[in-house]
Image (tube, rainbow, N blue to C red; front, side, top):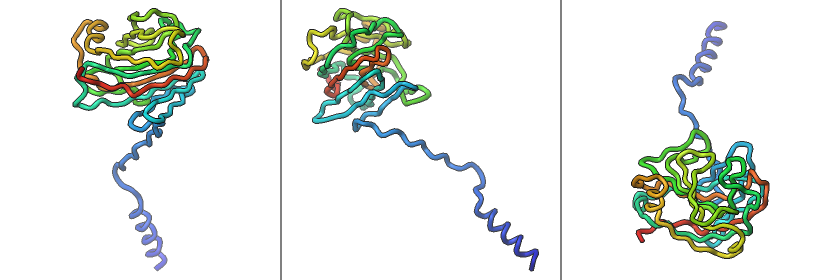
Length: 218
């Protein structure tokens, strides 16, 4: 009897132990501040505060940086026209957009193009050929340049300076034409659209407002 009890106890313990590979729990994604978009933060940098009211996304920033991204549906990925409106409280006065260590912008709309969805290792930041449209501080409108800190990313200056601050400005871009001008090749489909307001290099304060960018046939 003394021998049977330890054996039974051992059997009960073994029955409860898991054997073989166990399914890994999927890590919980941080809730997005804007429904339908996902937030990408950057290591050791405070995050831009995003919110949405009555269809307008507000970005409040003080020495911070983060992005919102939204997937484009299969139906719309080949539409050429991207339209939106935006407004900024002020520009980032000490920004130098062509320098990696001073590359800030009061408002930025990002278009990611490619054949298939790919993401960087951390944070679900989409990877592909990128076009960015910015509200610059000093560069002239219409200026096109390479992103100083990122490969395969071309930047168009749509607005610049303080002349139109605190005013809603409507934009409409033919991204197919812009892509050809930037990369000298035919565009693949649009995968993701993003927005970003960042002052992590300048430590300045800025607030931007965006309507959700929309892809259209014409």
